[in-house]
Length: 299
Image (cartoon, rainbow, N blue to C red):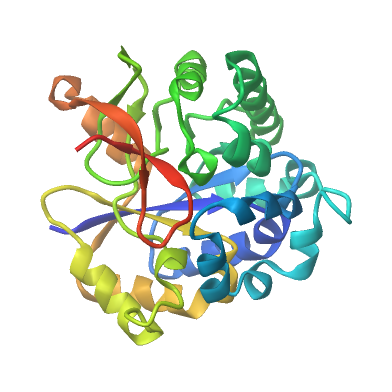
């Protein structure tokens, strides 16, 4: 049987306010569970202009209509405009996701800071960033987070250490392959890693080989029966600018008999037999359609 887990990364204040309620409604329409991972601190999206120096950045920006998707206001947050605090401003929205029966977890505290600087931060700075996210999550939900998925799939030994300290059930920081226990710099970490196995919408959008009419069939062709499939979606893209295409994908999956599964249920299923979970080296790799490097397991 084809099984699919949905992981929703929420990067911005606008995505939280608009995209998240849309995605809750769309997932409930087809009875699809999803794990919503929230950015919980200041929205400094505007500062991400520094990524202009990354290989492939201009190509991605030109084909994905960044301004249209994120909005001018979001692209000025933290530069010409003040950075809104996502957690404090959207507490009711976040709680409504949990109250609707969806899994909730941590994406980050400051998305820009984690995605662009986590590899330069010492352990204490990484720990402080994640502790701030945990504290805001606790304030909003009244309980500790049990899962996290790193902003921009940026992960290293220091971020793995703070995950282990927090007692996460699992994390989803990497791309490609089956679940594993990460080994970084020779050290094996105890928090289970469940990678995203499918390309994201923004890695396909605007490419001549993937017109809108081809995207849903392409996703269906990538689903594998020998292991659970995990798709990362974004509140700012599938929940807003490309919402109808995402709804088409959900309906097509239902019609094809795909079973939607919860990420936390999958983690518990895997951890019932931890000896069967491999240890794999975590490395940084290029992903087709994405600028910069992301975390993945060595093949």
